[in-house]
Length: 278
Image (cartoon, rainbow, N blue to C red; front, side):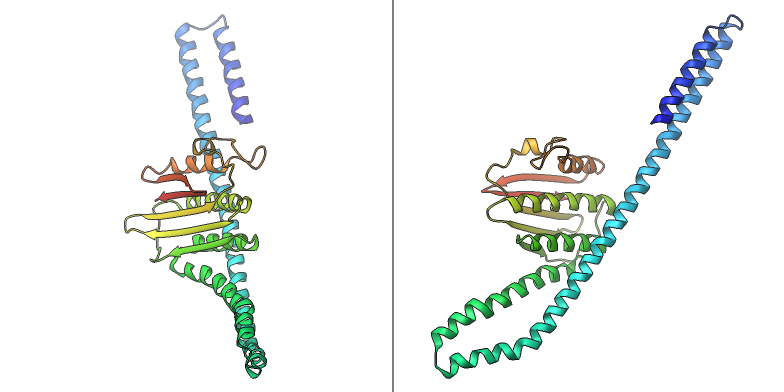
């Protein structure tokens, strides 16, 4: 930007000198002036292309770094699940042994309460976490799988109830993978932020393979004072503080590069849903 400004000043300064010289015909001055402007616009195009390539490289590097981070978190979560499974299997005998006291005393009411309160709850928590991550096996695009997994882990750590549905294999998408990761990151980050502030604290994610296109649905519970839809896509709007309302406006900007991509947003009964078709 500074180089473009400097170039503009130089060109106009030279142009001023040329047109205020006493010698030389007006035709010569006009030709020289045209050459200067061609040079000027040529340099501007060069600067624009250089800046665009630099920004693209920067975005690619940031995207790859995020992918590595997401994959690392995904791998760590799989290792954690495996470790929990081993511990669960190891403790299985002890859990069964803990039931014998109730059985020996013929205390069926106590046995039922112990089973429902302690054992069943432990099993449900383990299986719920395992199922959400396990469903991602149908996501064959490793960048998207890693990103969703890392966001699920983040949501679960915040005690947000998560549900995931990927019935059919997702092998490809019709937009650039970097753009897709940016879109997905914006949708999931906003969903987590809103769900965390809501009463129900719920998030649901679905990926549907419709053959020619993929449908992504992200739903989350929202606070009672949620803003109207027409406001949340405006640049600068945020419920999280100054200079943080750039996510959804960026989302619209990214999608503007893909004519066939559509997004539908609605709020019904305290649930905010965004349906993206790509």
